[in-house]
Length: 87
Image (cartoon, rainbow, N blue to C red; front, side, top):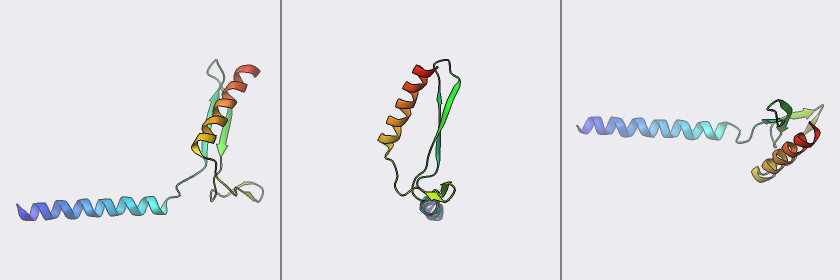
């Protein structure tokens, strides 16, 4: 009984450590595309948000700052509004 408990604790510790290391190595923010649809449900435009560290987005240009989730949401909402006006 005691050895099973030790084995479970060891396994959960190893899994937790592996997940933690994976989140540290993986970039927290990556290029996040968002498709905005028109009122009929057809794709209108694809927005791509580049955060710091995501690499180049135009020739040799790189993002020097990251948008907050609130700002990204507001941009998506505004683009959705424009898709309704244009189409």
